Length: 358
Image (tube, one colour):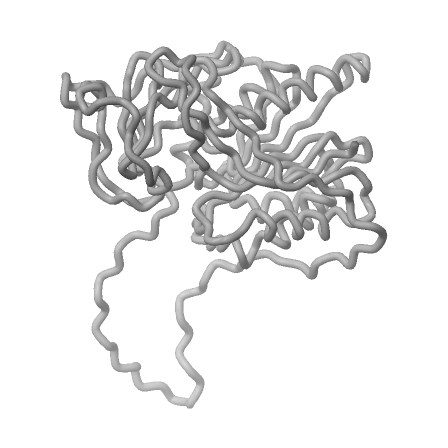
C-alpha cells in the first residue's frame, strides 16, 4: 500500500444486499458461504537473550535531495517542489501559518483537492495549465516518473531519502568489504520501486514485493527510465506476509530488509492487512530472514495513532539475543524555501525503527 499502497488497496464500496431466504434443504446442515481468503500465520518465536541496546529518540531529517524539496507549509497544507512542478497537498500536521506570502502558493502548478485522509480519494487541479499524468524526476542518481494519483501521492515518499542514503552507503561498503560478493536487499511494500532502484544502482541484488499490479508496472517503468533493465531485481506481485512466510520455509535470507507497511491494506487475493494485528508476526518473520552477517532491518510506519516507542519496543523484543542497537524516532522534512537552501521548520511525516548490528 504505501506500496501500491493507497490506490489498489482501498476496499470497493459495497452495495446494500437484501436478505435472502435460505433454500429448502433435506437436512439441517447450514448452507456454505463463499470462501474467505486464508491469512497465513504461525506462532511467534520465543526469543531469549538480552535486548539490543537503544538510541531514542532519533530524528532523521531530510531537507530534500535530487528534484525534491519542501518549500513551505502551514494551514494544514504543504508546498513542495517536484522537478519542474510546485505542488500543494494536504498536511494535517502543519498547524502553523505559512512563512511565504499567499501569492507564492497561488502560483503552484498543481493542487490536490477532495478527501484529506491519507488514503482518501480526490482530484488534482491545475491552476496555470493542464499537465500530463506523469513527469520525469530524479533522486540519488535514479530516474523515475512522478504521477498525479487520485490518492494525493505522486510516486515517491521523499522523507525516506534518509533511509535510502543509509542503505546506499551500506550496500557499497559491504560490496567492497566482501570483495564483490552479493548484497541482498528485500523491499517489502515497495510501491513504485525507487528504493529498490537505489539499492540496485548501488550494486545490490533486490527482491521487491508489492501487492499492487499497478505499482509493480510503475516500478518497471521506472527501472527502464533509470537504465537499470539488466539490474538483478525480482519484481514480486504478492501479499507481503505470504511471501515472507514462504521465504522463511525455503530458508532464504537477506542482508537488508526494508518494510514500509500501511495501516490497512488488501493483497491481490483479498488478504487483509491490519498494522497493529499483523506487524508483530511480520517483524518476527523478518528476523528469521536476516542473514548471519545482516546489515539492518528498517521499519517505517505512517498515519497511525501511536508513539514511536510502540514500534521501538516491538523491534527490541523481536531482535532479542541478536546484539546490535535499535534506533527509533521520527522522520522529518525540513522546509528549504524557494531556493531549496533556506532552512525552515521541520515537518514530521512518520515513525521509524531500525535495527543495525553495531
